Length: 251
Image 1 (cartoon, one colour):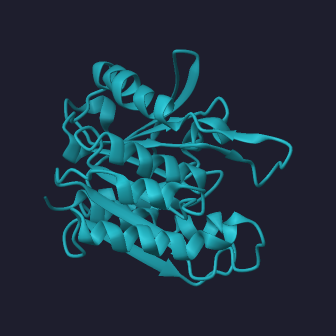
Image 2 (tube, rainbow, N blue to C red; image 1 turned 135 degrees about the vertical axis):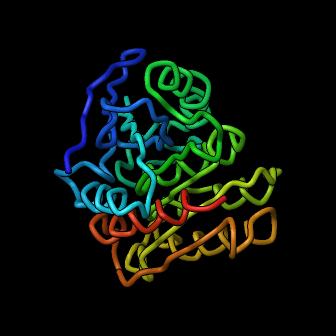
């Protein structure tokens, strides 16, 4: 099973478009998932997720999906909601430009993709996903634009980030029928002495809060806690195909 990969550029930002098998031979329209970090979640060089997704599609257990991998100009700035000391480079700061980046995705990039590719444009058929800081910005963007992004995937999202729990607890969540998938390693950050030690408790706090404010376990929110005592891309993204099935199958 082959996917057509198109490299595109929009407003000087590099895009990697994964079109489903048979895209060129049909007039069908497809759901779209916007991926952070150039689409590393499904990049065949980084994981086997795309192959698994295509196999599910071939068995009609998942609809064909257009994936849009979006390159960042500076992920430590664009993927962070607030200005904060950088735990990776103490001499620098996280830029806190997430709101600008989220607006770009919702108001500029999505209309461009919808105009150029055969997409299903409503929020139930539009997803956003990422890993680590990419998971954090995907969640943040989905919360800000619930009528645009109806399907959210946060894989080991960086909910240790200072201020994000308080932001969620003060945010007015709209009940638009969104679905949210989250996962985290059971002991991520446990050996850290910086803010990352709050990875698991903060992730659980956010999830539990959402269940009381606009989301429900059965229909709109799901959290998987897997065995890992460190931040593992390999382990986190194993859940991508299963998460997509849960996010996009059913109403």
